[in-house]
Image 1: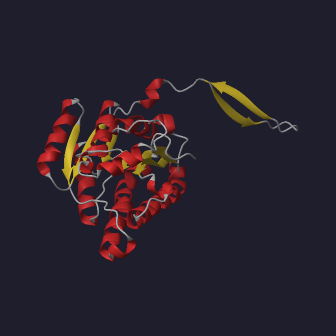
Image 2 (image 1 turned 90 degrees about the horizontal axis):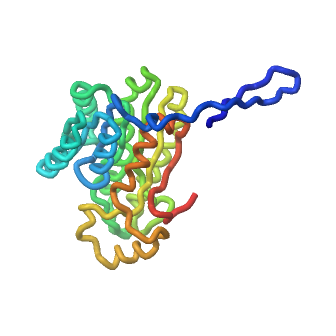
Image 3 (image 1 turned 90 degrees about the vertical axis):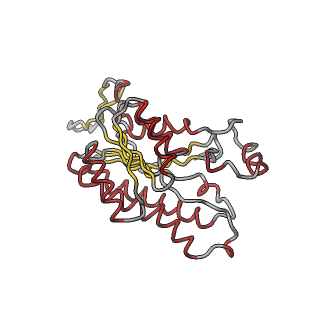
Length: 276
């Protein structure tokens, strides 16, 4: 049961509580909602797109490069029976972002759920080995892109006074992973964007949250050194690797009506590697 709180106008000024029914499981349904998942032709992005489709959402899958891989991922999405579309475009370009959001709106309807997931390569280097161009690329993907996409989707979300914006962050900020300053700094900035935006948009019924996965090996980690993988794996308290599907429940929950009173949060999905 839920509690409804109301102020008593009597002199005692007691707070009264009235029991209300708990939301039904249907509150997790995303039927008739339109979700746009950036960087979703592979890895965690693809898994999130499939999860949203399984919950009933119409899903726009995004990619920039590797068209054959994107088409294969899109075929998997189509196989779920969901209404969906595949959108190619650069999430760091204002012109491209505006075009993509217009295309999603034309094909599926206005975006209700925005998943900010796109990412470039993330090499670990000593700070002396980075240059500013690489730092700028990180900022473009993790601060500029979320800004551009959010701004493009906001008119519809504000008009209906409902929306879900989910930033995909990383545990590296909490763990201060080194040598990784460019990526960690940019992800830290995205976390700040998430928190401030949540406060700004709360009055409009729009929630803004972040999911911070741990190291979940996907296709792009195929060539990572085995000793590096083994070292990380040995530290996971739950004593197993995370898999892309581990994000499914978190994404559906934060995208659904069930999380309507949760905003500005950073949910770590990493088997207990960080605790808050």
